[in-house]
Image 1 (cartoon, one colour):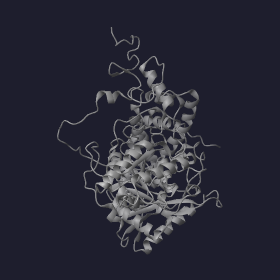
Image 2: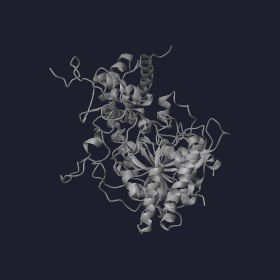
Image 3: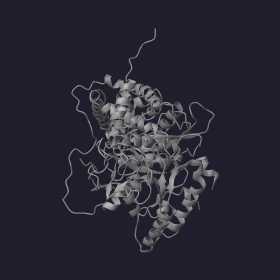
Image 4: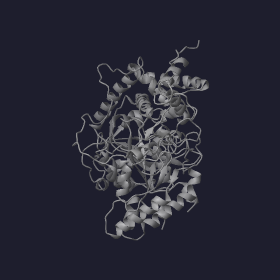
Length: 497
Length: 110
């Protein structure tokens, strides 16, 4: 039996039925990660002791007949979510040695549901990046081609699930950081509606955009995980009070009658032809199963990246002011004054991309520039949201590519921050509007600049109305019943059994 | 003839912004950031084309009201736990270099 690529739903079923113990499952994955991860760089930290102790508790709970939805499921956590007693870095040197005194709410809920936390996953520093290369602790590599990036910022979360190093992971998404790496690694990732999942214990990047969500190998696994982590939390006042529906039963519904909006601006200049072919085929598959395509128009699409980067960096410049060397993390030694200590600590602790974004955000908020940059971006944000909501009034969900191209090479875009930002063209609009969106694998294609190169995963993005996670999961699960892209395995995972 | 684009941001503006953000930048980095921020600001200038007359800014996509809860005594982080991650602790407080320049570090007497 190949445990590594079993679904979370199946692992949970087998552990509940006592066919395999949670301890055995945990050992299998820890062992696999220890052998495979040196090549991929997914984990920043493995916690064998904690994971095995937790697995033993799950086995004991099973013996008592407790019914846990994620019974013994091995889970990796993006290292921007706090884990009690387990070093949490946000991929940054400035948090060196930080050991959180509490679990993030979503982590605590996964543990309570029987999930076993294997360790902490690599990411772009403070979730700022689209390639995984901005981690202070080295890049993560794409399991489909280790010379290429896994996407970011939830780089380790997507690559680990893709390579079978865990069955499920948590990522966070501010402008596409769950969906884009899921697309480039050939796995499924869901960004919930803003406020659906508590942000308590999520180290803040941009507070009006950040959301935690699951990455998995199927829509059903996303559904089970979301059902566990979603719902109101007294520790996050922006968390939505609406009751959590049964997402798994939504997965069983037929796609017949779904109206799928196709925004013509998303299928234009900049989209690689091979990616477009895969996405159009996916639309055809859903339409053959009874869904109906509806033409929609999102004319503000060319402005979403600008709007996003002004707002996200402005919020980041404010959120990251807390890293001053006083209460936790790094402090530069030998400073004569407080100001000097701040300046030297922050210069030593933050990487280049984080410094760039703090500067851009501080500039956009400065007196004299505020109206031209931050305020104008916030106005355009309202227009972008209204435009998406009126498109969604004419359809049940919007279908698009997740990214304009497949995974690019490490180093290819590090010298050109703007080119890196532009790869977020299709994901930032849902973030700005606070809408739920999912990315699922929908094909394999060679890179545009290397037609004879390796076949790499293509992601399909579905965007839904506020709290429309069920309709997204319904369409995604239906697509996965009709196709087998989501069960394809990367070559890097095949080499070592 | 080459078209001359006005500089979106000068090196001096980058230095001022860095001071506001409490970031110490080397001169080489000021140069690089001036160039990179200039290109990014050039790109985002396209927002000037959008008609935003009379549009209220949207600062937050979600909650518009502040939820209330009963004021109840609950568990809180003990002081020792809260101080555990601090780089420097003195007498159960976070310790920092002198705040008032010119005064001794000794509790700001005088």
